[in-house]
Every structure is written in structure tokens, then in C-alpha cells.
Figure (cartoon, rainbow, N blue to C red):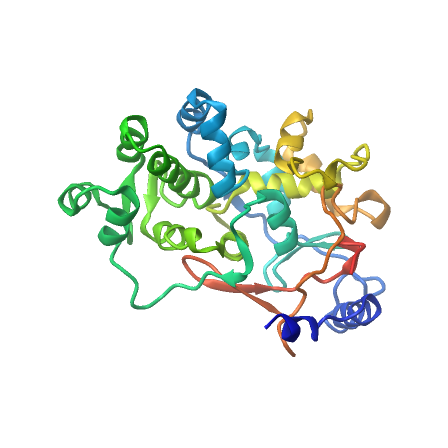
Length: 354
């Protein structure tokens, strides 16, 4: 299997030629004189779950428990402290190109990639080649919760609620279990499920959606959550753009960190990125960001971006290989927890790598 994978590696020149040919044919930003035009304004809502209760629980844990969490689920607790500038977010959303699943800022095409989100999350047990796909014969919601929570089926069934067209479990019930569970490993697992349901896939406020448990149930088997996170990010942005309104239900914190990694000139981090303990999310939290720029001003800035205005490779990315297409198809399929989509990282400039 490894040899089969390696036989498909292409050199930089071939990938760059493919990228430029595709963009020119599709009349993207590399086409001379082609710049994006703003469509109708999208009234996107970035209402999130209150994270203070999660932060309080995390703060109360000792360092040993926190290290056990990092070893199983990576850096996701840092998302609690990533500030989401709602005016910047609403400004960004106006430039989402639903046809190509990328941001087109004036003459600049940009898109969050699998490799970038993998670097941000730093999940040690996730295997990049084990992709999540929803099984048609998977367990019921109640059965999955029984396995994850280690509570009786009657206890679980009594707490399942219907929210819109899907079933959920209230955060209040999971919080009570986290605070009282005698098994440290199980306490950590329930806490991680809560982060995925409230922060990464926040579809129902203060509730964990049924679909989140299907993905979470397989994280312990090494499945990477990154394609599903990107899929729901892209799908939510596209649905809001097409409808002209809507609430974003992807992970706004990750999208903010990704944006800052490319669109702010920053001091070089030297060799810290090669350190085993280096965390891009923790680095982001330590940085001071302006949050007093109006949405209209952000739109003006983004519309007029030029190539020299951006950091093409995020300062926290270590040069590595990239997945840029699937076989003879120019799109990489992304399977989410509520649906599927695809993307194409259109340019090597985001990587400066092989």
C-alpha cells in the first residue's frame, strides 16, 4: 500500500503546471484581468455556544489529566480561547466562491487545506489515510451514546431530544457526567465529545448532534476528523452564500486561525515549528489582534488584496507533501457528517513545498 501511494507522488513542476492550467481554463485569479466581483450580500450569522463552562472544566484539571487529553485528542482545547472576530468573519464570507469551494479575494484564490487543518489540530492518534465515511448500517444514536458514555440505555433514551430534523443530547447532561464520572479516561472522552459537538460542529446550540457521535465513535480507531471538518465548513459557507443568509455551523475558530496564518505579516517563528511541543493554536492565542475594524472596511481590504499582501505559506506549516487531486479528477472529495463536497487546493503558493 505504501509503495502504491509513493508511486503517485508528483514533482513540484508537474503540480504547478496543472494548477496554472486549471485556473486559466476556469478563469480564476491567474487569468489576466480576472478579478472577483461581489455577489449579493450574505447575511451570515456566527452565533456560537458559550464556551465558559468548557473552559472552567478544563482549567480545573491538573496537568496530568490535560496531558492524557492531548495524547488522545490533540490541541482542540485551545479552541476555547481563539477569539472569533464576527465582523471579520462576515466580511470573509462575502468572498466565498461556492462554485470552486475557495475564497476569492480580488486577485487572490485561497482555501483551507487538509494539511493546514491537520497541522493546527495536532491530533497524535489520527491517521491521515483513514478517512471518515458514514456507514449505512451503523449503530443507533442511543447505542453509540451507551458505548461512549457507559450509561444504561434507559438513561440515554430518556435524555435524547429532537432538535429540528435531527436528534441530540443536551450539553447539561454531558456536563454532569464529566463533573461526576469516577473514571478519568471516560471523563476525558465525554469532554472531547462535547468539544466536537459544541465547538467544531455546533449545529444545535447547547446540544450535541447525533451525527457528531458517529464520527467521534471512530476517532479511537485512528480516523482523521479533518476532511469532515473541512467538508462542513465548506458546505455551510456555500449554503449561506447561495441562500443569502444563514448561521455558520462549521468551526469558526479554526477558520480564524487559518486566516490569520496567511493574512497577517508576522515575525518568523524560527525553528519552533519543528519542536515536538509547538502548537500553532497556542501561538495564535498569544497574539494580539485588532477587533475594532468594521465589516465594510474588511470587505474593502479583502477585495483589494494583491499577491505581496499575503503570506502564501502559513508560518506554522512545515514543508511537506500535499493531496491536491483524486486520480484523474481535479476535485478532492470531502465526506462530512451531514453531507459531502469537494475542493481543489488551486495553487502551490500556499505551501512553498513538495
